Picture 1 (cartoon, rainbow, N blue to C red):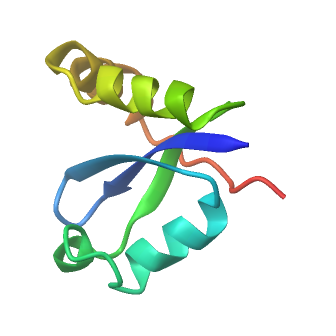
Picture 2: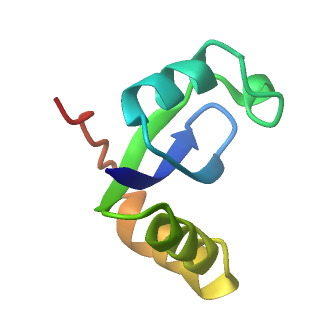
Length: 88
């Protein structure tokens, strides 16, 4: 399985959108400072994820969410105090 995910840094009001096949590990990497693009905004909270069968689907959704319309959706619909739990 592949995931498209959105994380939010409450201390800096920053969002990050990505895709991965190992969601738990990837969120941990963001919070451990192992990603140069996100380490200065630690801590991160998972606010949304979607599951896909192929990497191509996950990458397509990531691209949609990174658009202006996608970021508006994130701010309006997802960042209202909703933090998601990682899947088992």
